[in-house]
Image (tube, rainbow, N blue to C red; front, top):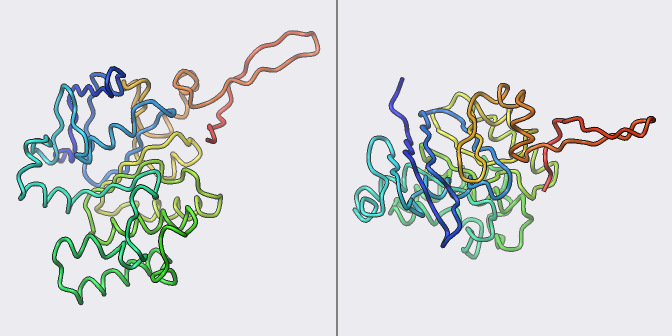
Length: 267
């Protein structure tokens, strides 16, 4: 087995007095598409930010490709530069990620920070805009686009750097059905590629399409893991973690009882 891209060991993280992650451990192998599955507030987005080195655990440790992913290590300019080059995060809300006056400028920002030659920046950005089907928006302000278009812009701004690892926070959240379908198609297109993709979700409908393996998180703890088909068969687990509802039925006799159904939450 290859060494893991990420290895999380007994991590605990708190926001003030509220525990977001509790003694959580996992390993993510290279080239895998992994889903962090859990209801809203389960801690999966916090874990994604820890994997991106934006926040750091109170206790426990995180390693990236065998090296410590700590606040102290990220203060080393050489390590930080390589890590940011190799790992890209796309936030759930694109509005907190975009800041440039035009779509072209937004996608070009990262390459310019890495001091790519200007001609390479122009070529790579234009190719990425074409690949994401947003070339016609290149002179538009990203702040005035639809949510689906904004998500494509933020994804393009990360993918243009060709990261080895892609971290996605609820990639289909707040998208209309067409935009969500296009996003899923894009994620499916990454199957078999060299990139490691880690995506948070509570949407069971897309799980088998976007992930090879999943970790189920509840109240900051790891409660299950496995391939999507196995996890989806565990109806009691999905009810317990608030990922499906138990529907109640009234029978002609007047008796009421519950049947669990695999209907995913739609928030």
